[in-house]
Length: 342
Image 1 (tube, rainbow, N blue to C red):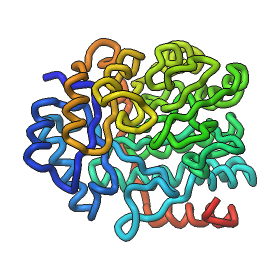
Image 2 (tube, rainbow, N blue to C red):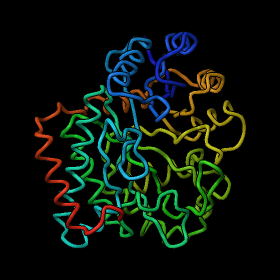
Image 3 (cartoon, rainbow, N blue to C red):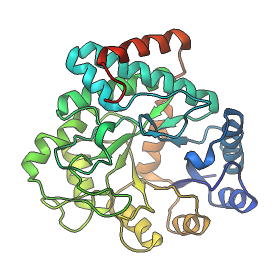
């Protein structure tokens, strides 16, 4: 039985009857968890299994945003605090190998946490390149302000996740670093020239074009498409994401319910598919919106199905890890940066 080309959140710490019926009937490709879904390790593991049982797919993708810093859905008291991306950049400036080692090790430890719960996809790494004056929504989540450095650290993060058997989602393609608004609340417009975008923002994503999955940016790049954000711009998806950047993996939207997008949820969903995204992401767990998304979502087929299959088959078996030793090594590396608040 084919699945549908959307990823959905759910409302709470366990499925209610209506959600279970919806998932069974509409067959989303995957799921995404947020803090509202998380209490204890045992509860999360049970929820993950419940989601897979409901859809009837034992290895259905279950995603989470577990970056470290202020974007960390799993946290104390049951899970460790991880450093923000900027700390890896600070270490990289001291010694390139230190920055890459810390990024790889942090991601490897995160992967171990996720693997314990049955979560198999992390919405990480970021390749956004922030600039002075941009909105703080990216801020210290970013690895730096130079494309080569950002790409190198993102690659190390990807390697750490892979060593732990976790698939990465590259975000926010083709770049959220220049946005002067938070796309959760409004539509950012970037008026930078195409030449400068290619030299900085897009350049950070090009070395990562082989990654299996990526998430779009709800950002208007006026030099390329003055009307539509990247998520709903056929021009940007074809010419930039698939073209100049060369990304050929599974392309999912950022959250369809974010206020950067215009129109009803159904209209947004149609626009996302029309522009060339393979998958719609819906996060807030509101069942009526979930139904709107499902009603406008096709079965996964053609190139989108091929990309989804390739993504899942690229997942590696987790390698053994001495967590105590790895955590001690990471703490030692963090101390070299001189601060945990980088």
